[in-house]
Length: 304
Ligand SMILES: Nc1nc2c(ncn2[C@@H]2O[C@H](COP(=O)(O)OP(=O)(O)OP(=O)(O)O)[C@@H](O)[C@H]2O)c(=O)[nH]1
Ligand SMILES: [Mg+2]
Image 1: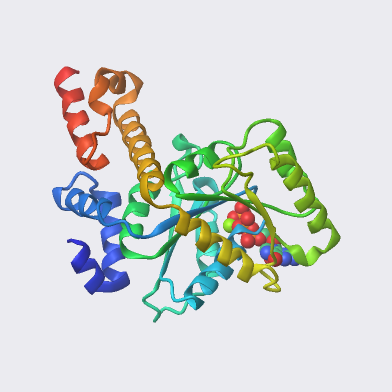
Image 2: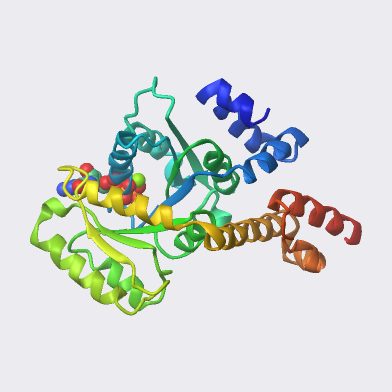
């Protein structure tokens, strides 16, 4: 199992690789694949976040078509809370991406979130690494605002906050300081007219002081239903993705790798075990987080 065999084997091979990642993450073959993928991540991961019902899944579906229309290959990871997943929300989400099964340029996978981590599935981070090595764009849909929103920043290269008209959610979250600054904010359901424009103005006001990289995040409006604003959003996302290069991207990926190491070790060995590893947990230059995690884990076992 390596990138070459995954490329040759198509969606079925990738589905099997993810199943292996889930069932035997420590298998040397799986670890080897992840290490290879880490150094071959040419794609960009975009996280869609926002309160339940704002239209993330519908937007993801529309974006899949928009990106495909621009010749980009795309993988979608939908993360569902496990409580809802057991009621079939996973299938619901999956069905909403009405991708042509014969199109090898689209891959869709749902992940059940583990409660322990609040919003994102344990698997989402390594799966994203694998997806970025195989597809141009990776879309990650998550649920909620707050913890899962912070977690998405740990695995995605760009975070898009979705708000809907007349909800006031966004403002509340911002005022409460619950929200991390997104790279871009989108008011969905712009077919609702004036309410959408008002929400966009409110959001712009709230984000005006949230300057990062020299400017506040762009606020856009779109309707996945009518298609209004979608080409502009697609352009903005591709531009933002294009600007994630060089030292900036290296730093972000490094932070993602470190976040994954920390999270994984804490999940496996608890806070005390993690603390016992000391500086062994720190990702070294030129090293993959997967190799570092293995090294730190063996140190914890020795010291523990
Ligand atoms: N008017 C309008 N309704 C929309 C639009 N996009 C989504 N909706 C509706 O909004 C509701 C929620 O859409 P979803 O895409 O499931 O929202 P979500 O954010 O994925 O929801 P969760 O996954 O439950 O958090 C559905 O009833 C959609 O039909 C839009 O562009 N315009
Ligand atoms: Mg959804």
